[in-house]
Image (cartoon, rainbow, N blue to C red):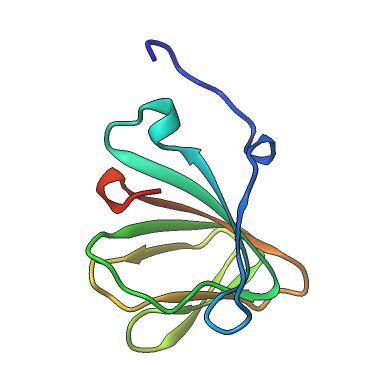
Length: 119
């Protein structure tokens, strides 16, 4: 692609993760990634339903997170901290982490990872 691309997040079909135990009510939209030929980073929009959460997990790449909407409990490898709308979170490689929605409605956050981390 030899020009800038502009899209709308809600036009992208989400991938839903919900086994009710390890992950619940988590929806991921890949905004920028392989389809656009992004060479370095992947940008995803996560929506967590009320009471929803991502799995507690770790991996070899970092995350840069920005909370767009709501309020999250973030397990940062050692403790639970609160991240509200307008907060940012940096998760270093190999740190156990999890995001839980503690808002009355849904919460949303942008998550950017290196392309090597997949989508």
